[in-house]
Length: 244
Image (tube, rainbow, N blue to C red):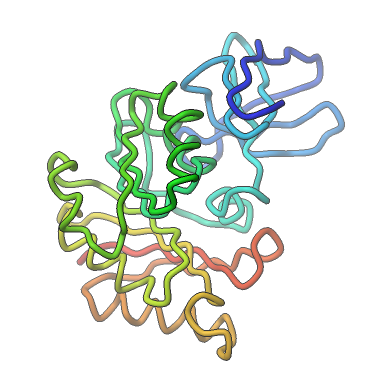
């Protein structure tokens, strides 16, 4: 199924869907062969964003969430205990690319939430606009450089609950904290999909994760989790922290 395809979804005997034990608005899907996948309830029924499978179960449609295409899904499968994104959450997403993970975040926050998406690459933002934002009123795309939050401050209404950062920059924790200084609510959360190879190819990935976590602590955050994403994304980790 190509991006943007409309599909009625599949209703199959043997498929089961149940809410995740800990994480709100995230679901566990058991397929016909017994394989288990993550999923989110489709905010735009019938629409596939990146070729993911659509499944109907008890009158609802769910999108299978591919952990090899989404670092957040990989982190959840690897045991992430807290996803500070739920129904009604306001999220600033830095490095939204073409919208694979932002589309699932859009499902989670629902119509009462909002996902401000910052992306620098023109081709990616075009895909985000045409294939995702056009069908989801809670996604607001911005063609901007995440290193310069002052340039898009006028487009963000009030403070956000959570900032999710997935950028290929050498100073990822600093970039995230700089944006948080502008946009994050008191006691808000940050999520850093840390790409160690973009920071220092000579350091061990684990050392890079610790370094970035230390930077967040120095900027006033309590780091609650560091979850390596192998085998879904090599030399990556998800870092979760809360403003103190």
